[in-house]
Length: 332
Ligand SMILES: [Zn+2]
Ligand SMILES: [Zn+2]
View 1 (tube, rainbow, N blue to C red):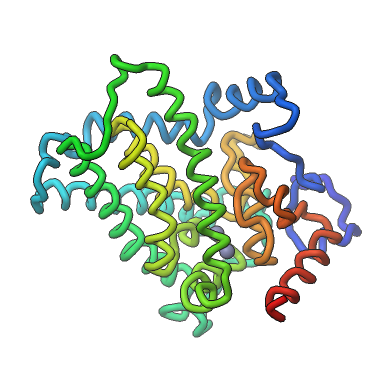
View 2 (view 1 turned 90 degrees about the vertical axis):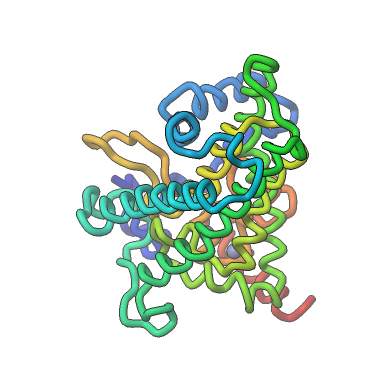
């Protein structure tokens, strides 16, 4: 699928890579560009995008699966277990489904796969000496556990009036705006939490667990140390302060949990009859997994560009990142 010539230096590094240098898809630009913003809204919210699918899934789960807010007024095993089971099922369906399609059935071969390697086996670096089992373990224990804990606590706060809530009928404009803003908030939060995790002490004891995954797969997304889960999922605490609806909370839970599996698929897009139908991983984050001290955020927020940690995918950026890493390790 790649149009690049095999003799280009990047072709030795990657199996597939998009056109480089990476473009800036962030709606935050100066001077403001209303036409770009409109295209951004259309691309993310008025087409069959990852976000629209997640919002529809959130609606379905709110209507038919998750416990009603009334039940969340006091902590009881029934509704908490129900929430945990749904989250477990969601992770298994999304991460497991993507893993099955791309890595077991090999539905797309290696087309649009960034790294040419298969998941690692027989290496004691991993828990159970197996990358997929290691990733499954961390995702399904503290990953789903803490995701559920944050959700349950937020539901309890909402049900008791300790966290502000809204309804669609009361405020349809804020309802829709909050939905559009949540992924932007999540990206903002992720950037700063992620920079914190790269402070050498936290990196060594916590974040390195996620970074064992240089060659990523769907199960790598939520494969983190419990302390990282706690920091990463604290994004959900926004619902404790900003007025939202339980549907927003569910959307946010999907975005942070199963959403991480989608962004770590290792492939850029899902192909259906050779057409790119669904955006999955980004080369942006794949670069972070290979070169570490770059691209802490995601493409949506301009922080990496503003703070000089942006890797645009080119050889020159790799050299600059290596120099930054050296400086960090020398403590300068
Ligand atoms: Zn990652
Ligand atoms: Zn990192």
